[in-house]
Image (tube, rainbow, N blue to C red; front, side, top):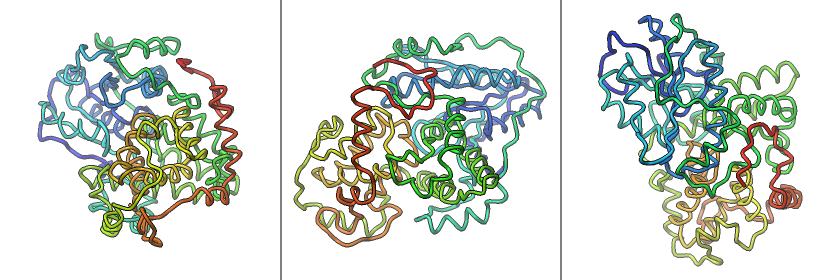
Amino acid sequence: MRERIRTLNDKPVRSGARYVLYWAQMNRRVESNHGLLRAAEIANEFGLPVLYYEGLTCDYPNASDRLHAFILQGVPETARRLKRRGIGYCFYLRRRRTDANDALYRLAADAACVVTDDYPTFLARAHNASVPGRLDIRCEAVDSSCVVPMNLFGKREYAAYTIRPKIHRLWAKYFQDAPEPSVRRRWTEAAPEFHMPVREEEICHLIQSCEIDHTVKPSISQTGGRAAAERALSHFLEKNLRRYARERNEPAAHATSKLSAYLHFGQISSLEVALAARRHAEEHKLIAEEFLEELIVRRELAFNYARSVEDPASFDNLPDWARQTLRKHSHDAREPVYSQDQFEQAGTHDTLWNACQKELLLRGTIHGYYRMYWGKKIIEWSPDCETALRTMVYLHDRFALDGRDPNTYTNILWCFGLHDRPWQERAVFGMIRYMSLEGMKRKTAVDAYLREIGQLELTGRDPFRLTEESRCDLY
C-alpha cells in the first residue's frame, strides 16, 4: 500500500473529527479500491467511520448527457454496496453553474483527513495540484488505477520494451487481490444535507435537469456502473478471451473486452480484470498473455507517460525524430483538407473513416485498430499537424466514453510517433507510420463493419449491447 500513496500537503490529521473522508474522483467503485482501503485504514487507526464522497458538476469540460449518464448510472449500486459495508455515502449533483461548488470543503471541515485518487489527467490532476493547499488537514492521493504503482517508476519510460521488464519483475508482489474495505466503526449518521439519493428510474430526468450539453446523447451501446462493468467482464471471459489474440484487430468480430470506459471511470479496476482473466485462462487452459500485455504493460506505459509530462496532449512530448520529420514535412500539400466540423459530422470522402466517426458518435467508442486508422487520416486531411492534434483531442474529449484518459492522449500521440519507431519516409507523414484504406481492406472485414455501423445509424439500437438496463433514451 505505501508505494501507492502520495501525500499532497504537509497538514496534520485533525483530532476530534467525525470521519475520514474518501473523495472518489476517478475510481468510482467500492471493490478493489486502494484509496478506499487507505481511508478505512486511517479510520480504523483513529476509531472513526469512513464517508465516501462522489461529486458530479455541470461545468467540467465537455459536460454532456453521455458522460453524465455513465456516471449517474453507477450511483445507486455504489450506494448499496457502501451501505452493506457500513461506509457512509454522499453524492452531490451540481446541476447549474449558480449552484454551490463547495461540497468537498464543507465535508472536509468535519474530516480527520482526505484520501483521494492519484490520477495523471483530466480534473483529478488539476484538483490534486490545487485543492490540498486549501485544506487544513492532511490530503493523500492513492494510485488504484495501475497494477504496479506509478510511484515505482521514477522516470519516464519511452516504449513498451523499456517498461515491460520492470513491470514483470514487480508483477508477483502486486498481482494479487486487493482486500475488501472493512471498517471497525460503521457509519450511523444521517447523510449530509446536500446529498442526493439517486434512483435508477430518475436518472434520465436528472440528466435533463442539468446545465450541460444535451446534444451529445448517451451511448446506445454501454450502460455505466459497477454491475454493468461486471457483466461486461463476464461476457468477455466467457465469449471472447479464447479468441482475443486471434481476432482482437478485427472490429467486426467483437472480440475485445469493451472495458475501456469502465476502466476510465474507475467502475472496475485493471487489477480485478487482470486477475479474472488469468484465473479464467488457467481454468480453461487458455492463453491470456496478449490481453494482459494490453491491459497492464501498454496501459501502464500510458499512465507513466501522462504522469511524467506537464501536458499529455502536447507535441513537445514526441521523440526528437518524430518532431523533426513532421517539421520537415509541415509544408507538404494536403488534399483533401477537412475542417473540424466536417470531421465531427463524418463528412469525408472515405466511407470507412466516416463509419469510425459514426461509431464514436453513437457508441462513444471506436475499435482500437480502426481508431489508429481514424487518427492517421485526420493527420493526412488536416492543414497541419497541430490542427490534426487539436481535432483528435476535441473529438475524444467530447464524444468518447474512454476519453480524457492517459490512454487517450497516448494513443492520439502514437499517431504522431509516440512510443513508435521511424518508418519509410513519405509526403505529409515523413517517417511517421502510415496506414491506408487498402491495408484495412486486406487485414479486416471492412464491408461487414460498414454494414454494422449503417444499421446502428438506421435503427439507433446496438445488437451487441449487453443489457438494456438503465438505458437513457434521450435520442
